[in-house]
Length: 94
Image 1 (cartoon, rainbow, N blue to C red):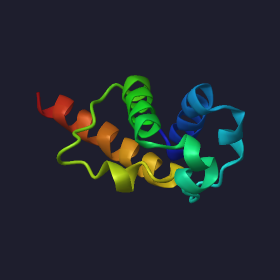
Image 2 (spheres, rainbow, N blue to C red):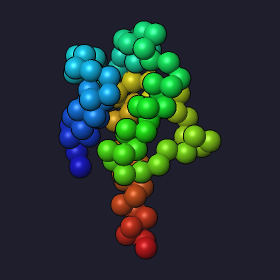
Image 3 (cartoon, rainbow, N blue to C red):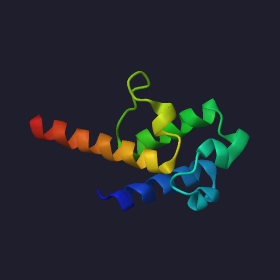
């Protein structure tokens, strides 16, 4: 899966949760700044949950720095790409 398709899937998934304005957010813009008070801790958990569901992996709240990785679309894209790459590596071994 290439980076563009990951970004598109993230935007599409978050658009269903947060609304169409996700399409206009810059990749490096902070969700907290963009969505303001709507992006509270509960919304952050919902964002993580829909990303997990869309891409088929689990986020480890203890070892994954979710405050960092889920701050912007660009970071989410990097995080998802790395998780998917890790899954492929583990499947190749197993």
